[in-house]
Length: 91
Image (cartoon, rainbow, N blue to C red; front, side):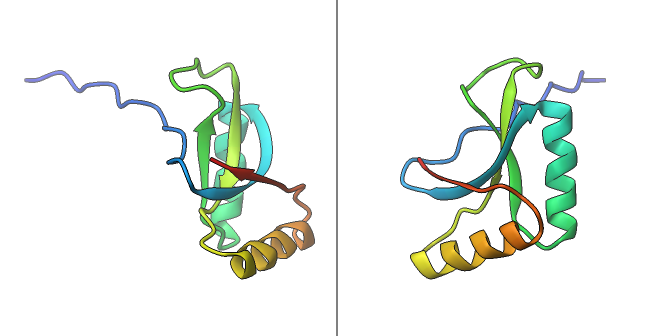
């Protein structure tokens, strides 16, 4: 029986992508927020502030990537209407 490898943690987004950040919290809380966002129909993910960081560091909660300005504006408004603070983050 082969031992299961621990999966690598979430990776930062690719350069050139634009996301909407709705928080920076410890990983367990970030994953809860991602679950809530996904249930509300948003494409959300957890991303490290620094690649390879420990789980007890701050993790970003990101929605996106957003492909264009129109999608960015609509998604930002939808998040704000749902009560989430929003920061535009370009990688």
